[in-house]
Image (tube, rainbow, N blue to C red):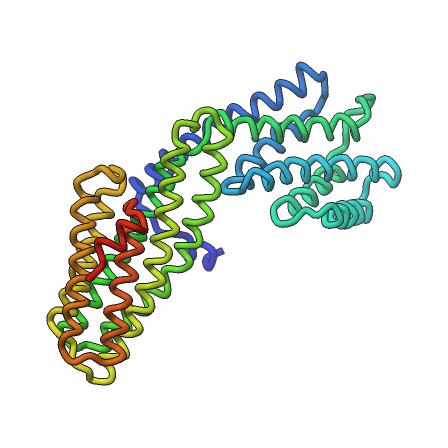
Length: 366
């Protein structure tokens, strides 16, 4: 127990309250979905012990958070299937310890056969456990039918709440993309310092940090796919579809820029490790690149027309000009590669700013 407690995040009371406040939408969904599910099953369908309806609603809303639409629907069907199969088996073999184990195994196997996976598999098995453990009211209607319908009603109520009270797609994407840009700027700033001071270890640290970003990029990509579905399905978020598409496009270019940053950091580290001189212009080009990324991040929410985006473009173009100009000094394979990566990274961020390929070819033609 002490080991588990030590792994929990240490949060202050205000942080805990903010965490609860950020979940207000999910709390409302849970209250509305469980109430509606229980009311429909109990009052409209006339089912007794309609506990599977609110349980299924909770499962969809909690276990289904962040899942794509097909996976959420699969989760609903997984719960309902587990209920139906479990009840049919129990009608034949009765209830007991060994029956519970058999119901779980058969329900899980059938869910695998049906092509379910992940959370849907888990919930199908859990449904079998509940069915075998909870005895229906004497004289009640056929539990195989009533509990299957309860699970279906609850799952659909949960799914309806996702559509009627959806996540804020643009806000969620902003929270994913802006930190990536901020960290990219920090890595580039660290690289420019390494180039100024000739510190190969600092460049290696920048490379390590750039490599560690891929997991967060993948998480952001998953979020982008999820919120795009929310924006397309939920009438409440239809107005955000254009902005969500813009952020998703920006994220693709930011991903490419981060990959370029890894190559750039590796080249700079190699150059410094080999004792090759780094000109002031080349270091200045990476500084301008970092500044361009920082300004772009600050103006991201304003769109292409924002003054910050225009200013960021000028800094990014300047970074390429400086990189090309630095090659007039003594050029090596590494310095040429660094200049090339500065151009590639600047191009990716310029693409993210909304610049077209034709515009890019004109602006970066040095």
